[in-house]
Image (cartoon, rainbow, N blue to C red):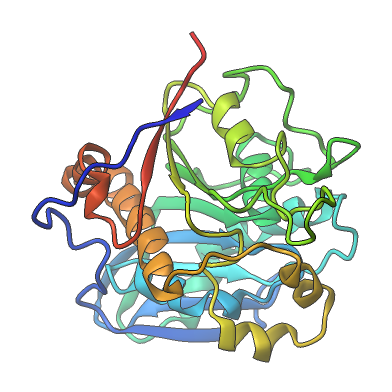
Length: 315
């Protein structure tokens, strides 16, 4: 896998990195298999849906600005609160995510603003960190729950499949074999350049260790996968600092977050970069509008932070 060098920024060719035209409204509901943090446009209309899975012990509200950015472009984002205490055993949370997905058909409409209608024929799946692993595992059919809906695209935001090569997530979906993922939907993997680096000097401890991070997920995808890396930022830099303080306090998630190396640049710009790439992917594969995604791939310099397109180095 190799990264293409970012080119100088041309005139803006996409609005995906900016807030969209819709006001995004956060909603919390317990009337579901899991407590849900939902961010939805509050304007009358019919909108595609994104199921978003959070990282280990991180409340969904920690992603408020990122999810509002996505929702402002006309998407209903549903983020369940997954509560498995065993970080390496993913099956309960995979099953919970499947149960939430099945609940959407009957349960989502009543909790949305009046005249806001979910279009579940246009459903996407995404996740960050451990949630990125869970999203891949769910898409690969690892739930013990039958699914009544189909995902049209899959997005992994700095996905991680374990603490190290001796402590992998279970079920073990990474095989080390290039192009081994049996996925027939378009996939995008977003990585961070600092995610694999340790904050403790020479101690080999990182939040997104080599061999289990975005690079391996990308390598095991087939030709229908698009990869980006944001080289100057870290694993947690797309989260809201203030919301993280309010949501996770001194929990394990906060302790884990303190171990993640962070970039020195503006975090808002990082969030806008991740949000814009996600929006462009959703527009391309839920709405058939490929212009924004094509523009970012052709000229990654239009992003608000340094962005590189990843090439597959395998034959």
